[in-house]
Image (cartoon, rainbow, N blue to C red):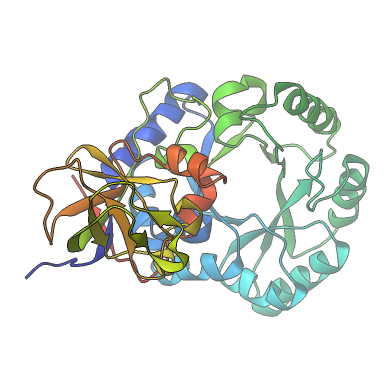
Amino acid sequence: MVPYPRTWIEVDLPALRQNLSLVRENIGPDVLIALVAKADAYGHGLVPVCRYAAHHGADWIAVATVQEGIALRDAGLSLPILVLSPILEVEAEQAVFYDLRVMVERIELAQELDQAAKNQNRIARIHIPVDTGVSRFGCTPEEACGLLESLSSYENLIIEGIGTHFADSGFDRARTEAQLAEFRKLVDRLPQPNLIIHAANSAGAMHYPDAIFGMVRIGIGAYGIDPYGLFGGHGKPILQWKARVMSVRTRPAGTPVSYSGTHICSRETVIATLGVGYGDGYGRAQSNSGFVDIDGCRASIIGLVCMDQMLVDVTDIPGVTVGDEALLIGGEATVEELAKTGKTNVHEVITRIMSRVPRRYRYE
């Protein structure tokens, strides 16, 4: 029986370890690595990826929501978990109960966490987010100093760390250095010693030694996707997305293809229908512009990508038949290439892969 008849993902977990080891070589032995595993570990699968990383290179896990943190705790993960996005006061009880570190920019949330910790006879551990230029959330540097002073007297709350986030550390050096300089001014006058300081994402950790501090947050680089040239070609993508050929047909020149007839065959064309579409998370923007890899050859996507299928031109690839595999991501069909043809970023390409696409994990 074919275990994955239509479309599936294969995740190479040892490659994750290799990528994290490249980060470790760059930052040294004493800096904490927080694997950023939000959005289902960037589409790779939250629990399997984090379970593996916990034993192979990650010191912390960073997620976006309390719910993601709870899923990891329920799966038995014991590493420190940092929730990177803002949370609401109503989530304070759960955050404390599941021992999740949260980012606190408002005194009202700190009060709720302190009270929740008192009610549960626990300690709430928090980090202060500092906005140095993204304007998404976080305190200004001046507000951060005041918040640190205000919270220092809370009996059930520990300020564990403080961090910032770069707007474009992959490509905009001037802006990144300006953000780093502003953050460092704050760090140099912090009233509390021994805080965990963190600023660097994947590009920041590899390109800006002064941004490393005590912890780095590694997301896209850990998964081997490298639009920034971080690893000098040594990083390895850990995900391949595959689909099977479900139908093959030959159509004469002049035949319209798929919905709305946006592609017209310019010659007699062999069309392969793949069992994958935008309902699986494959971008509709790839219509008439993207390609897949079949037997090491490019097969252009023709016509509009449908919800559950898409059509590719295999005229110049001899012998394609029903049941053959196509690489949607893998081989020449890299995430970086899909981001370019889909006019988006690499993060969206992988995080929109739907849960109905099964994941298969490869271990040592």
